[in-house]
View 1: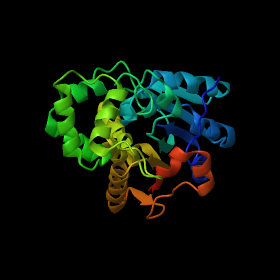
View 2: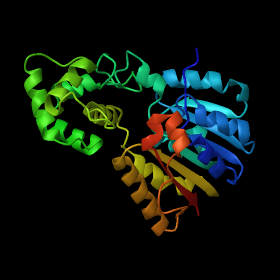
View 3: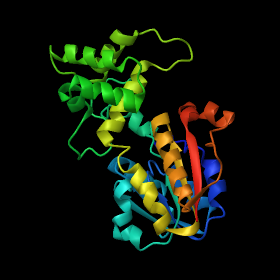
View 4: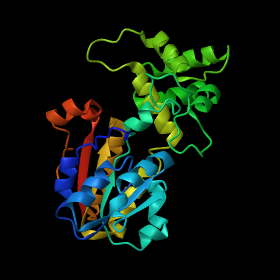
Length: 294
């Protein structure tokens, strides 16, 4: 059965891409192919270069995009370093879409360890050929390092208390599973979650995922290079799902605008409508920032 998939803010993204010059869209994190599929279905003037570091996601995307094989190219590569690849250097780039979130397929995979609701190995790697896992971070990093990633990448309150409890817990044996880590989080924050609030482990797992996959490394440098390799009038669309990443994109866009390389379409990010949030609750935290290449 094909996994369920809701490409976030796809209607808004399609509308924003209708007027870009003909050429190629780089779908920097193709995931299960939802955004790319809509582009190929509705925007004849765009071809798609679909990138992802997760080979499992690429396999699903390939099956979904197979009927457009002449207009799509799939590659396993980190988008932050893709601009130096020959497949990118030789193409007329009219649009770039970055959607760095994780798919429900990844969240629900019992072997990946992305969800605090499933008991699984503490892995969290999108590309499982890389070395560092969440278990290695939790069991070998110092108290100060753990507190920093929880604070910086998850904005976890009492990050220092959580890091201290993890250090104390691992003295009796390594933490190997998501259930073990969630139990430690609940010892610090409690297990009763007020109605309408997310479980504190969600922010902790987010922080670890960002750390393990180095999701924020190279983002600013990538945005800085885009105006110099894209077609004038092309558009950069960047979806973010947490405030740290959103601030990084916002400030990068502002710097490029001040230098005359980009024009920001609107001062505030676009957000999903109520109907989309009801249909796809995880989209509630999404923000979409858009800029036009000068």
